[in-house]
Image 1 (cartoon, rainbow, N blue to C red):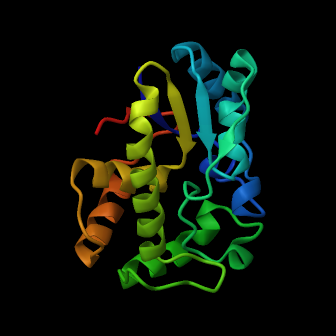
Image 2: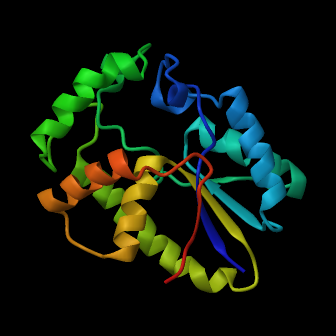
Length: 195
């Protein structure tokens, strides 16, 4: 049996639609179809953990209905929110490009865009906390299946730290950004957690 780590299905923000806030972004029509296919492709699921963001719930929904489950919300596994939510309200990817570029040019692990934004160090802390938590869960899922629905950037750093544990550093941040650009995690991409 397995612990599956999965990025949510395609959202409206992924296809350059405007969004009001991080948490309320919905799946696109294509994303809803991806979620349904995922439900058919995965083995029987015993438990589901999602982030506090709507798009992870919508991705999990077909599985929740199929197995009559309730999702557990984990406060640590939401997406990396490095830009101010107030500033980004009602914008799309194209309109945020300059802000994104300016953030990553700094390559400062502790920089925050605003009070309502995270630093890379904040993301690192959340990922480390979840990594410890999921390590403790492995014994519970020897004969059962768990699915964790999270987000591209969160999973990118989690997978990096699973493969190569390392301290917070500018080098880690640089490599993380390079991976996001050159080898991003796709919507509904599945990783199997192994210790």
